[in-house]
Length: 590
Image (tube, rainbow, N blue to C red; front, side):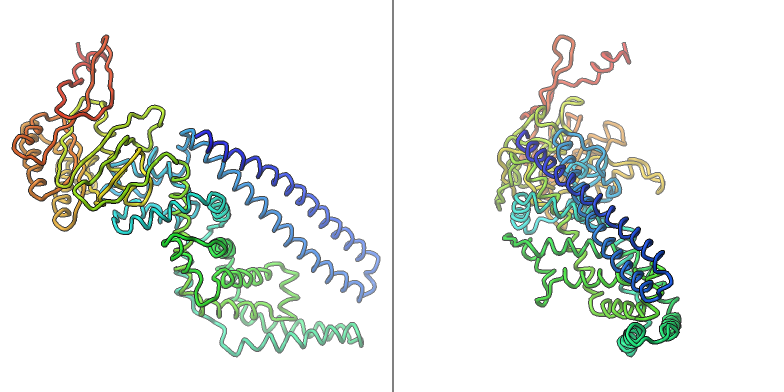
């Protein structure tokens, strides 16, 4: 961890130095604009009676001001990106020190009907998602949540190679994330895609020619005014005609401008993200395939998006009143730019969704690469196709502090079922979630918290945190029965690793013991593999009749009137329970 912290600390120092230089550039840029402004006012004051000088001064001042504003904006962007990079590295240092509870928790992704997301601390406060997620785009966050929950056991080695490659590209990952963090999502990506799909153009094909005809007339009028000179009324006449033509479309152009104004920054930033993807060569199969999606027909997507971003920015200039009047009056600016926007939408609008998905993919996979980089001692499971479902040596829960975590060895074979007993707080539930997360992480392609791991890919299904469904007027017991029925139906059609924690809690102990035994027998007959934790010691007797069932336990000892746990996974049946002791210790009962 010390080496990782030094890496991030060094990055912060480097970017702090860059930030200091950029702030100086911003100060100089502001001063230059102020000087130009003062010089323009002075020039207007002394030459206000000379129309040629006055108009020339105003035109030059406008051009210079626009150039300087653009340059100042570019410097501000550099500053914001460096600030984002500093924040990224500060966040990594905090997470290394187990301080991550202010990061997005993914609470919205919890789904009690999902195969496992409700049960294994995958989403919510202090969850694996909160710990590992570094996405900065809403679509990237959704994509990452989808990767965690898709229960996909295909192409795991391909995923592993992609994550390994990204883990070694720390600078590229940070650059991509910093750029993505500057995306202004005033309009959601779904709304943008819907707008593009539903857009109806209002400028016909012949309208393309009009600005090309009118603009040369305006230029000739300007030249005539300064060279011949023509009367200023000629310029005014051209201006009025241009404004009248533009005014015919002003309502529709204004709506287009308002709509594009809300998405302009998104496309401007997405172009930069696509450029980052284009400018790097990947070697892993998955990353190469994703990169290819933005290299279509020999034309780089970044150029296509840059063109669109540039057109959107050009149309947005109409909001500058002075520029809008002259640009529309002399060059039919609104018509020209609106036509170009509509042509772009017609040609590329249906491709935008694929580009957005590629960006979201890299945003999500950056989190996976970052997780791998931050855990150099974790191992990528070696994939097998044999009787051993999971063999994990030195396995630990990824959310526990490695300094305090107790590691265990796990081996469970296909069609084997573990029954785990143990005292309260002895570690049963943590063990269930450790195994569950190892399976989820292995399926995603991530390294797991272990010194070595072998894994035969299998899907996961759990029942650990069944809750009452008051809105459906269901009791806790009925909700649990529905969950168990869901598991029975699922294992008929696919191969699952089943994790259960104290099933049938909503009924009396005798009924629970009989029902639990019958359910375990049902799972064994279905050739299921999994683990069940229980306080019901009678369930352990199933191992006498069913060779597939193995008993394990977590122990607790009372030493010097204090409760002690070793959190070690052991063979056999637990003999020491602690509920009565705890009731007395906490002076709840005598």
